[in-house]
Image 1 (cartoon, rainbow, N blue to C red):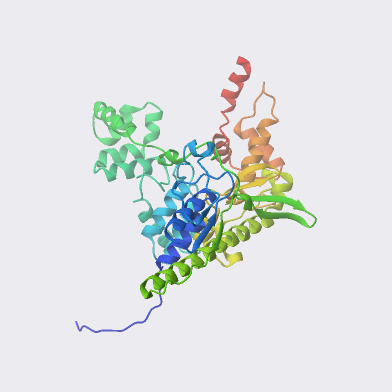
Image 2: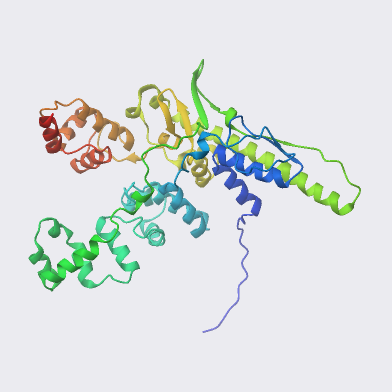
Length: 434
């Protein structure tokens, strides 16, 4: 076989240090941004930072570039907000995927994650939303399932447990067969399970002890019920021409570039010139951050005006890809801009990401519909039921159909459990106990 050499020219986007720093600034909360700029001002005599009144500043050293520095207030004693599941996954995606196409598919999988850490959508549907074939999506999923903690991106309980056993080098044929027939464990048919695994019941019990030591829902380690105690980043108000979005500038640090006289020494003047250039770049980076936040929030509010007017039932399907396309930004930029952001609305203080809602295929007249809207519908139907005669999941399916939403029974069960609502049997028992 003859060996031949070819020369090919390709174009790739190299992420510079300043680009990486700009992305970090975009993702910072107002408090983190203040701390970051204060630390930069301690090292840069050309950077002036005015700290918001009442803000908590990490560095305690005085500096020419820091004005109105204050001691830590009550917020400083509040436990730091843990990293969310989505933020944890996105950080690993940034490190594992450098090709823009692969990154886009990986982010589509990340958006499909349930709080349990399992995938909430079929791979075929995720592949369709990313505009790729299923085989390409499966190749990306295989890489995602290597993320920590092991078990994320599983499509079922059995796959989640199998990934963990495989990671520990313990996934035998016997255990694989047990995982494929977990329903027999729930039915108490251990002899039948032993027959399928070609082993004794005592071995089944030993394997069950091993399986119970695993983590069935690895994503729950990142779930936290309470919102962080911090002021909102944005505010939405009803103006003369509709809903208007504004930044809460009272919580933002003010950045300016100070003028430092030349020393007459070439080395020192060159250093000051670089410091001034860095200060101007930081000021522009902060301005870009604010502009991106405001544009993203305005776009979300524009699409979800009905939500603000009528509540969760009026949420429309909206993805990060759609917003990114409209704003001509990368989906990962939208993800960073909305991560951990809070927005003050007439309906309360809510995470900005609540304006996104996954599209759910349906046979109803209004298909496709928002998953959050359908979940809210299930909650409303149950809230109106007779407590002495609670509705079964089948009855909820019929009530939802009467409202124009076609749901499967298993979907109603899934939404009910996500809302923390017990089964009709448990609700009836609770009502009788009262």
